[in-house]
Length: 158
Image (spheres, one colour):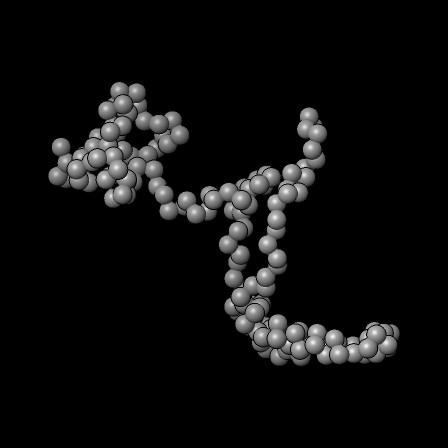
């Protein structure tokens, strides 16, 4: 209530990509049929277009109903940018890269990170383990099992 800007009014300068049909609709071939009807309408005069519009005998799009049924009920897929159940929406949420970080897990060190930290092999302890032993596990992850802190060391580690 204290903001001068109304809800969702902060997205004015952001350029939106043009709408693209989903793949399962594109595979029906409806875009080529629509392009053909658009070309036919481009050849018509204004008088012919108005006559068609007033008469109500507008030419419909010719697509096989079986193809449409399969597109919408068999091959339909969920969009990738949907929020999970129970998530709250806030301004700018669609521009975050949270979905691409799903493969990261707390406590797992990649080979590249181990090399950057100067760890000799996969059994050598991470540099922050001593501080964790001194101050306790991170409060954000109370149930995470950390070898050398609240879980036994793996075989081969010392």
